[in-house]
Length: 332
Ligand SMILES: O=C(O)CCC(=O)N[C@@H](CCC(=O)O)C(=O)O
Ligand SMILES: [Zn+2]
Image (cartoon, rainbow, N blue to C red; front, side, top):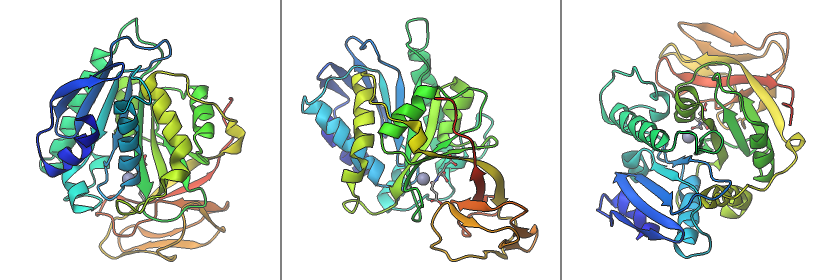
């Protein structure tokens, strides 16, 4: 049964490979990969990738999507759009860890030549996304495809729910900001360069409206406040049902852009502020932010900067923080 798909996937058990849901059918494409196909796409339907568990300890999005699938199966809504549902890093979810060997969310590029558990999974997920977009391309398609990659953050945040908008050629459709405002998103962060994340993959290679959504803080299964995510749940349900999502005022959200990516280059590396500093905390000009035995010191320049995703324990050569500043709100 569809409602048991997440548990079966994590247990490594075989679930029923295909079946009916109200308004359409489902098909298991592989471990942690589920396709929903409507009998007749709704007028407003868009092909949509919804991914969760790219980091194994980020459980709230898995619970939120599980609720959405359960409501579909219970007949509280009808399937109206083609949807690819992705449970990203199955082994890391089982271990309740961010990743097993390396961060899956840096591996989504077609020229990747690394081998191992996460690189192999990245290749499977890229192939699934390519095939899904190919099946739903063509003149009958309404609007750009969508990809929402749902995460939670390691630490608290001045804006607990925010969206990372990957860098790519495709312009963001203004309706996305209206949908996010209604879904309780409080801030938007524009990436300044290619990041090779899963959402970047769909935007860069498929022209999708694609985003990484940060939905609060990473907590174990059963400890998440899903009530705070109810508006986001309504956005996901609208997409699955092929309905136009509710809209809100984007001026309610704060907009930022990445100014600088702080990389960890040496074993001897430290961030010069407390580990529990919330995302989007502002630092004054001249503040020492990081010391790195190879790259030297990083200080705030002439204008204040805010810190997002600080993490001194990343692999060598990986991003240890984003340094960001306010950006103008886009045209709505
Ligand atoms: O809280 C943190 O430090 C990390 C949360 C997280 O997993 N964020 C994503 C953001 C992806 C992006 O930059 O688009 C990640 O680091 O992969
Ligand atoms: Zn994450």
